[in-house]
Image 1 (cartoon, rainbow, N blue to C red):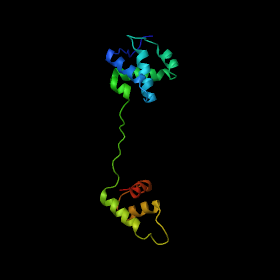
Image 2: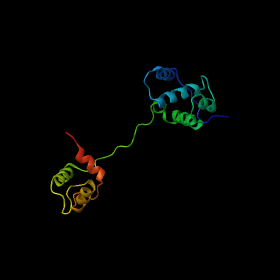
Image 3: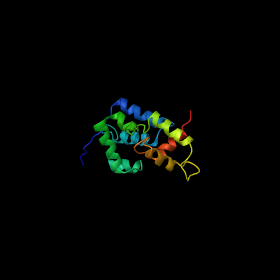
Length: 146
């Protein structure tokens, strides 16, 4: 069957992949990608996807995905993986944190002997320090160390 994504590695890329396989401490995903790329090379062994999947104990879809990524996104991205895009911003600013800490250090509301995180979250919304906040966010804020 004709492959949609044909891999043709340069000598430099082959050298990099061989170096990855010889290294002692490398992520398993990176090793698998390097192995797949070397065996799928049209100018090299040119194994079928099924044979590669069987040899390296993965699915044929994994091999196809690696082929596609090499052609569409490049060698570096294929070998290293995509960089993580998940970056969270701060929920509370410094003034809000200070008010929450001051509230926590004060006396709890009538009927309560201590502050709980859920009670503190409820109170910060009631006092309009923030629009909404989770008790876990407050836990992280109060846990901060110098």
